[in-house]
Image (cartoon, rainbow, N blue to C red):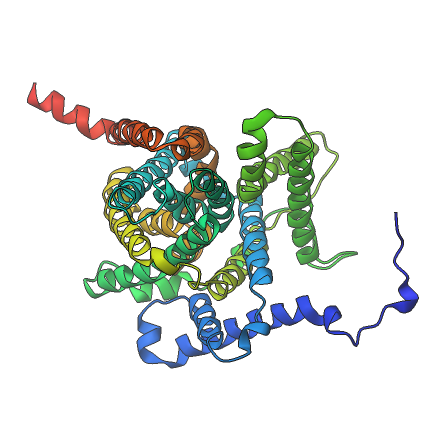
Amino acid sequence: MTLIDVSVMTFDRPEAWQWLVQFCILATALLLGNVLRTKVPFLNKSLLPSALLGGLLLLIFKQFPNSRELINKPMMEIVTYHALGLGFVALALKNNKIESKSTPMKVIETGALTASTYVIQGIIGLIVSIIFFLVGKKLFYAAGLLLPMGFGQGPGQALNFGKIFTGWASQQGIDFPGADFGLSIAATGFIVGSVVGVIYMNILRRKGVLSRKKIADAQVNKLEDYEGEGEIPDAESIDKLSVQICMVLFVYFLVYLFTNWIQGMELGKFGTNTLKPMLWGFNFLLGTLFAIFFKWVLGRFKKARLMSREYINNYMLNRISGFCFDIMIVAGTAAINFEELGKFVLPFAIIVTLGSIATFFYVLIISKHLYPDYKYEGFFSMFGMLTGTASNGMILLREIDPKFETPAANNLVLQSLAAIVLGFPVLLLLGIAPQSLHSAWITLAILVVFWVALTIFMLRTKIFKRKKKDE
């Protein structure tokens, strides 16, 4: 192990400031975005998140000469990746009273909605890419399967499977920049999830379905929101906020240790090519699981009287998750790069357009059935996640449910495991479809059958109720 020679360290070098400067840029953009939303009337009425405005400002700034050297794209991607995981850990650590409203069946149904949306995105993307391959456009026939990876899973999975697809395409003499194609889909989905969601919010507001006064009133905190019964003091030997941050970071550190441990295991060809890279992309899922386990351990300590005070503070954890999601949406927007599409612009545009339309109407229809008491909260949270990333869903949800008073936030957090279990066949098919055009056709047929089965499961009460009435 090599020790760092502290005597030669200096702080007048750019490297010592590089990371901090990036965070300063993100903070400045977020503040400017908030000023714009507050002071510009049409932006204030639009429900456009301040974080998205800040990201768009950085996106515009990047178009000026030499400005891209100031905004470091790899660092923005890293911040986006970790902010998602940390935000989900903070949410999962909460002792949330509304968790009881997220019944096990509702969580499973939400997971089914996630998985079925992945499937319908895969169907649409695969159909378009096969058509373009057959008409001689030389688009890789399995390229469309990157749509659910980019929209549903985000940049990490889009990048991982994009590289895998590039390898399969090169074996068949096809030049396909899978990583760039997948990342561009993820970037576009990020915008679609925010912008389309905001436009639909405005439509509902004009119709009187959503009330701005209701939203404003809900953003006023009450005394009981700040501190629960039996909690540790605000400032003792350690500040209460410091405790919350340390717990979040400790749980996230466990995620790293576990994932790194799995990387060193011998899991065969499938495990090496699919499972191992997939785990890094599911940092938010593992964070949720470890946070739930950590919270359970604290509960055991209290029952065994090894711990007498309550260390978890919901208000502060909400603020931590809110900060993470705000920073994530700024950094994620700033990292967008559409320059690598080249000759694939037309099929790319068709895939993301059709995918966005299908996702919007499918999620809207299913949400009205699954969440009759909070259909719009359920829709915006799921649509944001299933077109962009989970942060899109949270940001949209915060606009109409700022305190996460409905079960929508918990559904979004807790459904991840059910979605992975139900969507696992899709991940398997991602390793089969690229092997040949024949395999792609078989994959398409299986996806259609799987989508029908999941949709029937979610609409089963409505379908069987009709049958009983007919009888």
